[in-house]
Image (cartoon, rainbow, N blue to C red):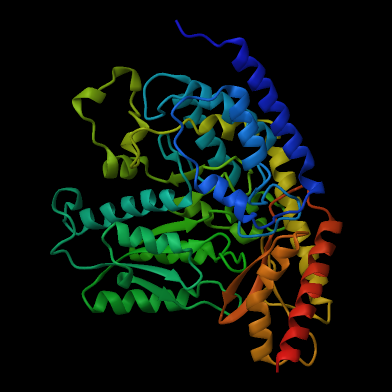
Amino acid sequence: MWRVDDDFRSAALAAAELVADYLDGLPGRPVWEPMDPAARSALLDLELPEEGADFAALLKTVEERVMPHPMGNGSPRFFGWVNSAPQPAGVLAALAASAMNPSSAGGDHADVHLERAVVRWIAELVGFPHPAGGGLLTSGTSMATIVCLAAARNRAARTAGWDVRADGLAGMPPLVGYVTGEAHSCVRKAAELLGLGSRHLRVVPTDADGHLVVDGLRRAVAEDRAAGRLPFLVVASAGTVGTGAVDPFGPIADLAAAEGLWFHVDGAYGAFGVLDEEIRHRYAGMDRADSLALDPHKWLGVPVDCGCALVRDADELRGTFSLVPSYLRDDAAGDLGWFSEYGTEQTRPFRSLKVWASIAHRGRAGVARDVAHCAAQARRLGGWVDADADLELLAPVETSIVAFRYRPAGVDEETAQRINARLPVAVQLRGRVFVTGAVYRGTELLRACLLNASTTDADLRLLLDEVKSAGAELLAGARTSN
């Protein structure tokens, strides 16, 4: 009979030391460096071994070929995209979860019941109503969005007298959803995958700061109804991709209720901002949404992957996905059935243990403290940008994203656009900080997202110094070439 031998125990202890040393050394190493071509090839060209390697050899490969080449998001000086550093408690829990290796589809075992609990915890953290069965963990907000929008589609089809599960969408009047130009690409992907068609995902106006304009939404709905289409969905954001803007949930909820629209909130990164007393007011009305998609693997720091779909009506979710073949009948599942009845996955990983650990290690107060720290730092960074003659703040700081650009006096718009398009990579290659770019209202910008509660004022100052230094080099090169 197989058993854990001394080699495994020794390797497990060595792996723990390796991981601890890696996390401990992050602040003192370059945030990111391009991989040496030889190191890259060593991974790309790995040959399938004929004979197996022992644990020590495997660990040596991990130590020498993998861990020296991180994405960089563990560093307190990583400000790129929306990728967080992992919570150490979640790292530990991920090891235990992988050792158990269940399928969290359903049944009567610890992971299933723990997932029910942590989904409720997430709902409580963001103040979203949580009926029993009203949510599940997913791979990320992209999948959570598909889950939520599928439920929205089914409700709309049923209201129109159509059984979309049996008959599909062919022959049905087109369903129309409404988003802003700042909506995450996962919303469009969901519309395409669900057969709604991106052409029927209508872009409605935003104000000068990127918030959905409710009067524009109202006009669009009226136009579509008059044309014989079926408005069914509005998607708002609890932190837009480019600038972190939070849409006006209360007025949107009022209109959605009046028009019979499913109100979905994309809270992938920003929904947890509701925990910060300073910005909580921005989230008024988020609890009135029909569904909310969010990512514990972003602002909560749960190790990837982990998203979450929350819905107001659990029956809508179960009615959209439930399909129980005879081999999965299970009296132990209870009234709620299996998680696989509420989403697309049948075999599901044990995500809940790392969520539980990441939250339980800090408690609600600790999580809120981390969120508030990041948001406060973002406001501080925005103030420093606004006061710097070489920089330009391009949008108000509403959550923990700061959208800005390098724009010294005397630099024309065309040159500023060219420099800022190249600036993120130029900063990344220097290795001291990591920031990414985006385009907002046609303007090339730097987009610094703060998710790491260990980031200091000195790290923020270094970010601005690196941006200005790299920007000056690019500007000098542009002037020399002209």
